[in-house]
Length: 198
Image 1 (cartoon, rainbow, N blue to C red):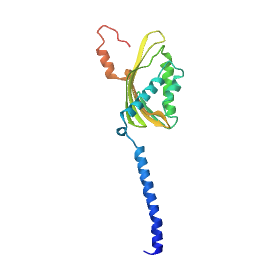
Image 2 (image 1 turned 90 degrees about the vertical axis):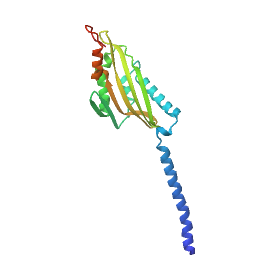
Image 3 (image 1 turned 180 degrees about the vertical axis):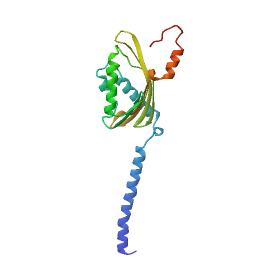
Image 4 (image 1 turned 30 degrees about the vertical axis):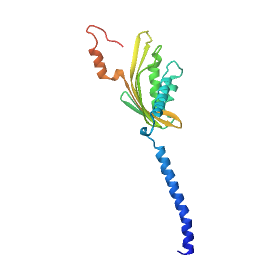
């Protein structure tokens, strides 16, 4: 090996080591960043599940003011938001907000002394920044005429953590009133000669 070849080789080796080291660090960082639920401890998953439950329960506290603004705080400020309810799908935040405003205008504001009750809530943590929640709920209240009334249903929501904040990116809501199987079951349990009601 000539002197020039030796010099070139000696300059090449450090560069090669640097490239290999940089590549290894990049692969390692990507591997660490792509954690799944299987890489998480039970306590980590429980902490995320508990925080999401607290977030949802607090947001749906109907004793607090400005319900539409509070409910919309669960969703991203921009970008796509998939929401399915009553056989209709919306894909943007403005569409979703319009639906929530309509619900509160025609239903929510007519409820007297409403209380949102969660009858079940299950959270599966998929990754450090992703989770899915499925819950059932009921909202007992009085109608404007003073009659007892209850609405309820089931809700599945996919949460993603963005910039340190948990938001819903997809959801599906199913009202009890729209469940024909449940309606038939309730009709079959109504005593003959009796009057059905909520």
